[in-house]
Length: 293
Image (cartoon, rainbow, N blue to C red; front, side, top):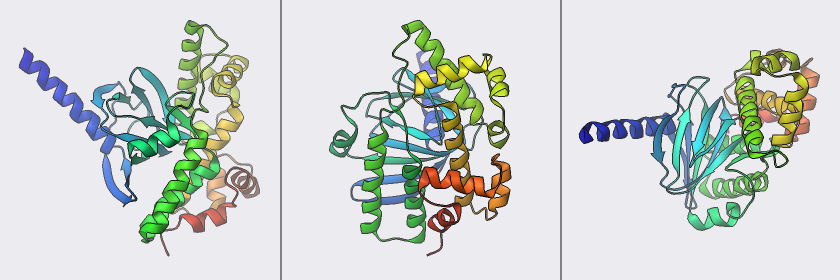
């Protein structure tokens, strides 16, 4: 029996490794920092694990979404942010949306992690600004172009500074009782998962989204703001722009097609939204994210 139990535990650990690594390609290794681009191949909707972290990592999500449970703290991760891990963290993961999410795993040293992330309030899950997200994607594009180690190291440290500024933004509902806060947290998790389901989900009305998660539009709007500190409209717009950035990164050329796919009124609306979040128009973003020198 003990042998069977050990066999099951080893299988679960292997599943966690498969999920975390997926189709992995090492992109950058410089200045004591290692960066991996991860395309997840795991598609189990129930939690798989446990697996145990062996280093200090900053994980940024570029597309898709998934549930992560780290040392008992559960949250949904999507392209608006990521999460932090430390050595020994117990991790479990579930993929209610299926396989295919894309993330960047940044492994750094203990001192570098402590300087930027230890002692900050908030959960392990964090959001990042549009400017930080664009810097993240441009860093990977520079690596694909063959930028020299000096440039990549400087870009990496700038990215970690931008992420550290955001860490702790994803907050809990401090005004609610613990039992209510858990219910509110679950509602926000389910809402994030619903919106991460691709372009059709991002075209839902507020009423349709509220119906999908089983509450009234007013209640959903109020709770989402109380838990996250941002409005549903702002969060949805962040997802829409991140989707456009990912599509440009993957080689899509038509801004008109992207405007329609992500529910913008027209190309001018997409341009205004992209500029407000990243500081750049989509045409300039396309140039930043191209693999060509």
